[in-house]
Length: 467
Picture: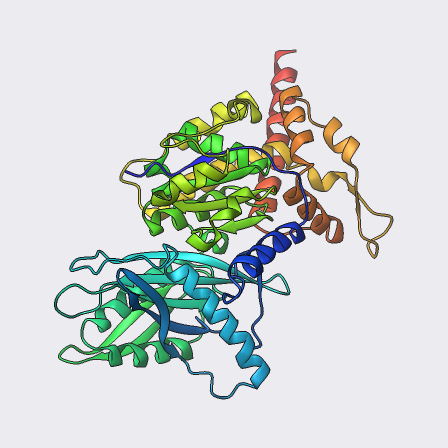
């Protein structure tokens, strides 16, 4: 089992431009032939908008031998082809595709030919110049053939954040790859032409396979769209409940967090799971689920980040940063005291309701409700402290009255620290623009308020009966 996490010092809360400058300068200085990789802090531009499709394009990335033990990743197939693009569009797309190579094979150029290789699926996040995000999904496998050979990667770029759904798509891709490369593309064309289903709905794809005939493939989108990209099983398989709370506490205060594991799939699943624990808030800083070798210096960045680093790069990370302690959970020392003690115990109690044999969906329900309940109890009264002169004007957050309304001294101390974060700042800006919010969080807040009203009414009724 991989030890997947270490986390360290709180960086100054600067805007994302700080990280843009840091990484862009590094790449321009050290890797002039490489375009900036499209992470959540290095922008990527695409001239085409296919948000209504399952995916924008599929690329096959192969390793081409350069010298003894060294390989260079290259795109050997792209679907669909970009033949109808203007020259400026093609130039931008080429930069994006070259950058994607870093994430398909983040280990770098040193490889040894293999005779056996278990396929693995992982993902990464790309951010465009307008702030919108795309998702890269990769399935790496050993191509059919005899003797030792290098693995290849299939990468799908999509605006859809749904890891489980694309894992199933890759299962179909891999099955067809074993027959013939040519079998993949009719399936992807059918998928591309299919309407993307609404949350909870299913779309059926027809696909022909020799000797098997026409198959009907059902692809279902999860009902809870904010958990589409998440599978909590890997996080809780690698970490104890108490350790998950320590990571959560550090993420809430926007500290620098690095996860260490060898498997790419472990890194991407754990990072996305941790980010999901923050709902209804969104991690606003650097998020790189798998740090490519050429960007290992990112651990030196002074700003908050969530990073995934493969274990074989551990020595490089230790040499350059004080945020890692090998094979352990590195701490500042205050992680167990960040969250209010009573709420910590309640979180642990709720997490213990999960079972070892829980399905992904069952685990999602237990974990998401536990952490959602934490935010309801700490900041659920937020809408009551956004005041507006009239319905046409944006509201103004009343910070002092918001904090004063919290009865518990421990919770108030935590909230005063939390409201200084960038994720809270952006969340409250949205509430100020639209005080009447909808969504899972606000539904839970209303349910909690109704529950408290009933409890209060019952206490009054019981008091009257006693008198």
